[in-house]
Length: 197
Image (tube, rainbow, N blue to C red; front, side, top):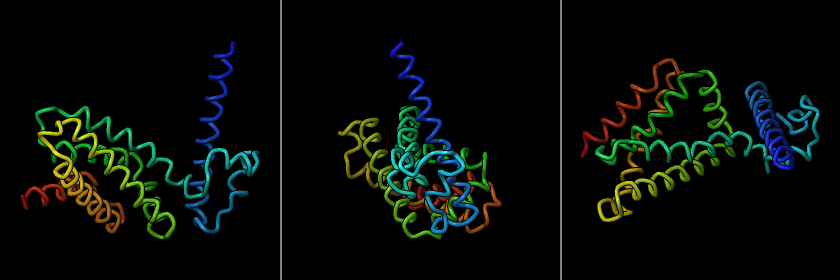
């Protein structure tokens, strides 16, 4: 009985968190990040401001929630890549996995990128999260390849090059209004790196 109550409580928490994220993002995209108050986010859900702060320390945390969830997803993707794949190829294919997520809802992805680019506090958080991804992927690459094969410096440079190409491809896609397919832009960016090697 206790396990059932705990399970229901966890489901409620997950649903509340998802609803706060959904309503918050809708409002941010409609009226801007700075113009949206926490009261406006919680009011349609019939919950208190205090409840909001049980789930998110700041409004920024609500926006970067999906990025936090991407860290283990990226590590799992890298770990599932074929062992014979070269390190840069494995990391670039891992990052390409995000393209399929973006392609399912390009309008939302474009609007979120605009939000990050137009809101200085979010731009800073975006950079923080990318650094977390880079560190996690570096650690996973070392583990995957073995420290003697791919020492820390080599792993950091490999992941750093892939992340730089990936970021440039996302920016290129954004500057084109999100009209083009993202994957070919990313593939071109990664090939430009390998052409230099």
